Length: 253
Image (tube, rainbow, N blue to C red):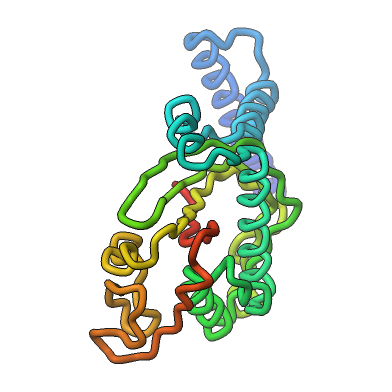
């Protein structure tokens, strides 16, 4: 029994001795690398603070306002930049809210005519796969005009927006992304203004509108059926004319 106790104490002493040697080795390495006198806890705090500062950093937006605004004002004398950004914020909020609630009601408005089918498919996918997304405490930081193109019978305008929100995602009830995740991100919202439906009807494919059933490109504004799968397409030309409509919303990586 005595021999066992001596052996046991010897093992314990040996473990503590190894820990002490490891401690001395770590201190030696830190001193050699320029961390003399700084505790490991201090280093850990600095790393976490740096990560926090990085999380809080807002995304930058592509600002071409000084170049593009003169062209916009030449085409639209009453164009109000601030009001358009307000419209952009409202558009993003309604789309994200519809995806969160998995409801299509707010997307029935004419403003969402050109993006409606794409969003409906996203909502159906969320329902089918039992995916729940949340976008809490949305705060917009900055907007800027990203591009402006006068095409045949229509105008295409893109707005870049930096924003933040607390994002949560669940799949089949299991948390994939926790709700405390504060996301700094950037979205590009694309609007079109059809000023001549006769011209726009022939080049509608340049807007990237696709059939909600098969994904084939829609090349004619007045098309009643998809030329690929013959599914019905419901576009009201009168609802498009001379008003800004959102056609796309993408989160930039």
